Amino acid sequence: MAQKLNSMRLLEAQKIPYEVTEFPDTERDAEVIADILGVPAFMVYKTLVVQPVENPKRPILAIIAADRTLDLKALAAVSGHKKVSMAAHKDAEQLTGLRVGGISALALTHKNWPVYLDQAAMELEHILVSAGQRGMDLRVPTTAFIRVANAKVAEISVPV
Image (cartoon, rainbow, N blue to C red; front, side, top):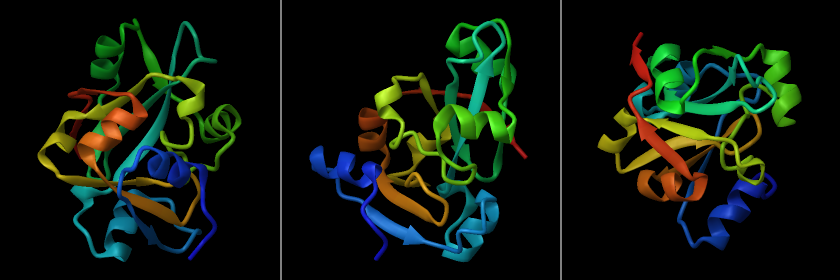
């Protein structure tokens, strides 16, 4: 097994059970990752870095299923911003210190950024989220993830 990441330490400290799933670290498309892992795309959640136009240095993490698209207007509305935009890959990596494809709300809890989990996750007992490095997802109980990531649940996506 790969080395222990901060996201795993955080879950262990909170006594939250998790399962590590690994895949080639060259892969960063959540739908392809779902195929590789043999799970439905609606169970694999991708973490998107979104920047409020008025304060781009304080991003929002939006977590949605692999088979859905972020609704920027809905996210702006629930997060209290006039307008938000997707961070460019280089900006997302610079802000988070993590590589695109390995950005994890669990690895960024110390930043206290707003985290929004798509409403669709509430239908699932477990979701797969990034562990904080490419090639590794964690299968965690949805309600425990919400608590640990201090996530707000809202309808922030639309079907692809």
